[in-house]
Length: 328
View 1 (tube, one colour):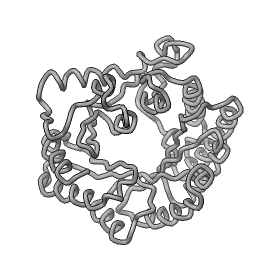
View 2: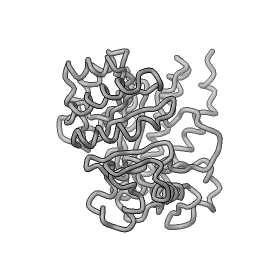
View 3: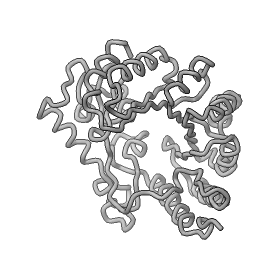
């Protein structure tokens, strides 16, 4: 991203931010462009003053955090989401990358001004490391742990069975910790909103600007349509370029927002059935872009993704119903 694109994005969107909002930096690895992050933060704080409560967030693998960057995060009270797969890190990612991330996490959790969480992605090959990884990450001092599951390849029955066992083990660990402290380390096991139909918030409560200056309802669309920007589907989800973007420009905005508005569970389907026909549709929340990553059709959910979501719901319900939630 160029400074010109960044400055234009801030000028366009700052007046429209909610009273409480977050500006989040994604990559690739966003710290490769730390000069732009620093430029953005300083500009926002200068232009916003105290009118809105704006916090800053960043998703990183932690490998580029220096003393100066750490001090910057502390000064501006960043919320960091560190990509770390625990014991599966060296299996599914670059060899010997675990040591680098572990060092970064140790530094970050020692800075009380920074809110630190992790996101761990498991595959059919690495799912057997899940529960032990949760325990490892929590022992490092991370109290906000999130799980994700790769959709780049099918999940066979053996992997789905292993997932159920690993989630059950993670549930037991989380229950024990909740009984001791009253806190829930796993984000997927925390109480959520009342039953409702999940809908994508793209274009309504979030917007994203890509490095090339294109504007989208969510950062996930940037990667999904990489190399397919000229397709009709891509154009239907794009708000155009930031240098010509006006938030109240009328029909163009309305048409694209309406397109995002169709991304709700009642309009999705699996190879077997429409999600609307499922009795658990009000308890299910599957991001259409996460499900569509290896596919071409947004909203068409692979059968194994549906099974993974159900396994998560089952263990979450057991956790919330468990007597371990009551502290002595």
